[in-house]
Image 1 (cartoon, helix red, strand yellow):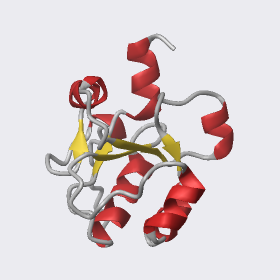
Image 2 (tube, one colour):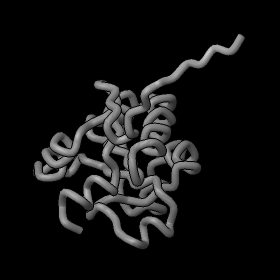
Image 3 (cartoon, helix red, strand yellow):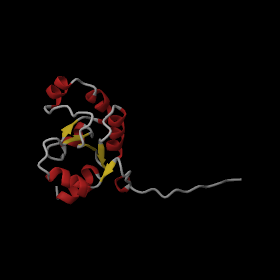
Image 4 (cartoon, helix red, strand yellow):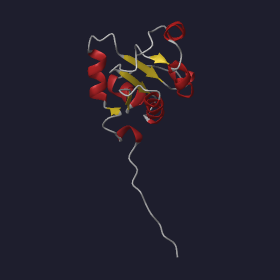
Length: 133
């Protein structure tokens, strides 16, 4: 006897976990607010970032997110050129190309206590399409 179970899969950038993922419009609001507390972290590879990035984002590859966020504030500032976010910072946004690695990074950050960290689920792909870049 063979049992076949089929699942309909939505594209990663369309899936949203309401407390973890944010949409393009929500991300755009954060970017346009005059908020110096916003930290946007691009978790793609260096090669991907070299082809284009969201202005103002910092690059921390997904496989180094935990060690980066574990740095003391002075080391983080020296390495990334921005202040280390506090555990309660409300605007810590991770993104990748299409949402998957950004979600992984968000989970890692939340596991370290950054409970308000979010993932821009559309990623650089959606951002560049909507921004015409």
